[in-house]
Image 1 (spheres, rainbow, N blue to C red):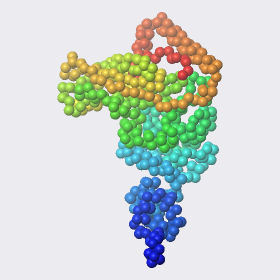
Image 2: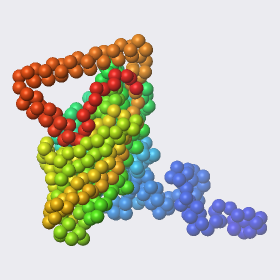
Image 3: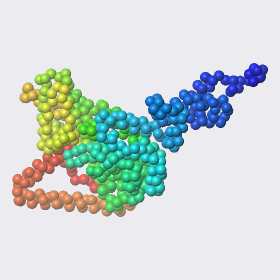
Image 4: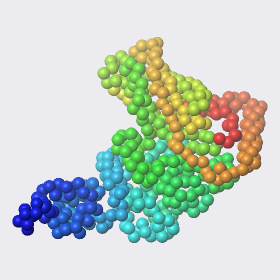
Length: 491
């Protein structure tokens, strides 16, 4: 044959050297590599070259050298076995598996109980049974994740983050697929929605839309937000958290493993920190992270609730005589319309070190190397706003010498939301009627409050004074301006 090729001057596949062919095949996708088996005997032999499958095992299944050695299989066998098991998820598996591996690696030394609460992966037949139960197909990336871990046990703290305020605590568990199926929604307003998480304290859940319905896009992940001004229980607005399950889960994991979400007492707190949101005055640095609380917010009426975490730190290199104590705070709060509220008062108020709440103010002492942190919150009638201000300190060794420490401007914005289709379908007469009812309710509340004030004044002026101070104290705990009568106009 070689002689015939030499006479004709033709170069055939059989005569090509092996190394260049293997180099070419190393750039071929696994599908084409398999198809090579059916082209010719030579390509069939070359396509079984085990190192060619190493790249595909690492790319699609994240199989390490250690795992290969432990299983004592060749790369091609590993690829085929894994494909047989989870091949339908090949487009999602690497991203989901990496997220799970990164999350567990990060949490094991920090939140071991949380990692121990994870369940083993579900079987294909279990997921098929759930689809039959709910009458809808589950997204492939959702199924892929649940093949790796079937949610977690209903424990505290939950894997999907916590939040703690004075009288409010949230911790979201990742539901296993059977529990999620039990909460699958067929009612109007949440039709074809499957819960992903659940908080045993608040009843809050994040949902995924397994079908496009009621204005939702298929596979969107969201927090439900009932329309408090509509009489129709199907009027449920949505705060959109992710376009797909993969988008939702991987973005959350990235925030955790990058240190974006702080871990405090074995819990993940979902605060977002802007690296530029830092201000240094002398030896003292103030940084801020923020979080939006959908369970305490509403689109109708517009009421958006945010919490923020303040970190005050004095440099280790500061001189001992620079030790100081915080006396007071000043806030300038601006909403998206440019309306400004100013709040000032003694000390700082909020949740300190996530242990207790101070209603009368805290006056922390800051010394070289010491860090002081606290959590507080505010509300806006607009979807976004920002805060800035300063703290006033005095030196411990020179008590008559005071100075201000800048608090950097930090912005807060709620996630993208979608208004309920039930509201959009309302006619102008219904809008007008709802507005009138809302105004009447506001007036009734105002009259009740006025009657109560008159009664208190006639009975006991001192009680009225105490009540006013209590209201002011409650308002100042979270640095929330006194709320004016809410506008009943629909936005």
